[in-house]
Amino acid sequence: MAFLIPLALAGAALSVTAAKVYAHFNKPPPNPPPPPSPEVTEEIMIRSAQEKLGMDIVNHYNIAICGGSGSGKSSFINCIRGVADVELSSAFIYIDTGSAPSGINETTQAPACYRWPNNELPYLSLWDLPGGGTQKHPAETYFEDKTLYAFDCLLLLKAGRFTSLDVQIFKKAVEYKMPIAVVMTKADQDINNRTKTKARELGRKLTKDEYKSLIEETIRMLKNNAKEELISAGCAEPTLNAMFVVSAISYRDEKMNLLDDNDCPSLETEKVFLTCCNITVYRRNTA
Ligand SMILES: Nc1nc2c(ncn2[C@@H]2O[C@H](COP(=O)(O)OP(=O)(O)OP(=O)(O)O)[C@@H](O)[C@H]2O)c(=O)[nH]1
Ligand SMILES: [Mg+2]
Image (cartoon, rainbow, N blue to C red; front, side):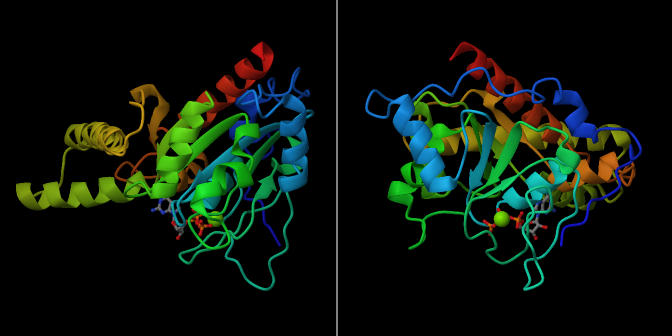
């Protein structure tokens, strides 16, 4: 059973994130997404998405949240929609407007579609995809098996190093001219670790300005490292404005007024979602 969290703005008609993009997603898209290659025609793309995922790309906008197991995909989907995390148990019942199960162990086994609570964004779905590179989800055919080319935008989530599946997804997305954002998750952990190391070095707590600088430096460092990793894996150079550093959990806490000054802020969590929505809508309008 999924439980909705009453957000800080409870009582308002729309949840915090939904309110900012409602105008985009209260009506169906004008066109299907552009087909990825001459071989995969619009008709094939529409049919494959329907057959393989049960995904309606004609009447719906669809965003894929992909990446390695444990990178925080399900938590990101929950936090952005303002719903609680739940663990996977025998009592779990899937509801598309409810929570995606998340946890320390490998959790998501099959693609699942999530909508906004109370049908706030009636024409937008976020898809929680299982990590690949396993017998059930082989890396070599992952992009085609999950019809990633039929989505409006791909968010490639990573915590730690890129997996070979991530690299394959990135390369295919570039080849098919699909919008893809590299999203570095759980950055609150990196920032907390670096803050503690710095405080030990100084023998005192950081001032507010020092903490702010440390956050900026961490964001820069994570993006540069990711960029170098992709280049050395033979990928096209990613632009820095397609890379985001997020803390989904801080985002939800921030919206519920649960963060203190010394807690890690949400960083670019909302920015990546809004950017992805804008690209999605632009691409459909010009397809
Ligand atoms: N500190 C911190 N932990 C996070 C964040 N996002 C997710 N986590 C934790 O990371 C673990 C894995 O998160 P999930 O959302 O289940 O990851 P996933 O990518 O969906 O995993 P699979 O379904 O197994 O592929 C959980 O214990 C989460 O609580 C975050 O922003 N900050
Ligand atoms: Mg998951």
